[in-house]
Picture 1 (tube, helix red, strand yellow):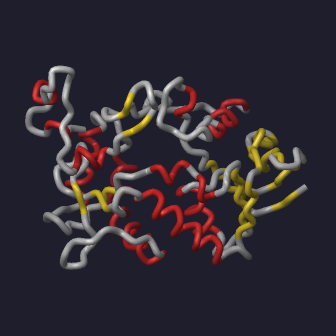
Picture 2: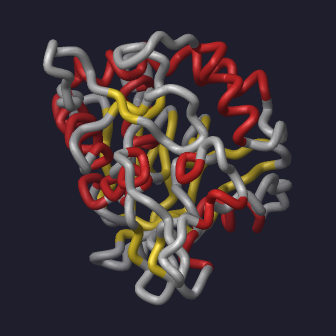
Length: 274
């Protein structure tokens, strides 16, 4: 039996950032079925929205309004407020960790337009934002190797539950087939999306809903499973995605006749509609 204070399942951006925060005070184990640098987080290209106001005057209130409106007012507005207020601090935090964001001519973090946003507020690192952040966090994780035990290429099979309390996970080493129990006072899921439930997707082969299924298997209610992004600039048969950044930089959506059809649906925002 392996023991930790906390086990983080998944080692993408969310998993690594969680582990880095908790390892300051706790014994952390991080379980991942692929190496952290191979996480699907590395496929994120476009950017992270934050109201820095480097291109135009901006505020967290405007960012919140755009987010809530873009979500058809279905969003948890308390959660939205928390995220948009924290976003600028997170951007600067990532920069201090070593993530190199693209800059304006006067040296500020560059920001570009994104769908649903009324101001240019997407902070980016060329066309490989996820890749840049992923490697910056992985470097920080290596610096804290004494505080975080990383189980590379280990697979989670099930949660260990006693009554209404989760006490750990059942795992196996993919290379050896060895099955182990990891006991922990808390288990944090950072297992990513589940795009691979669809026949055609731009998601990595690792996006197989492991965390969702582990929770479902022990009777934890699932919520908001219908909120899957069907991207407007994905190639249907190939499962390849044209980044939203392309539209942010001025690309058009055309129908088979070569017409900009968004005129019919969002004449004011066109390709940048939410």
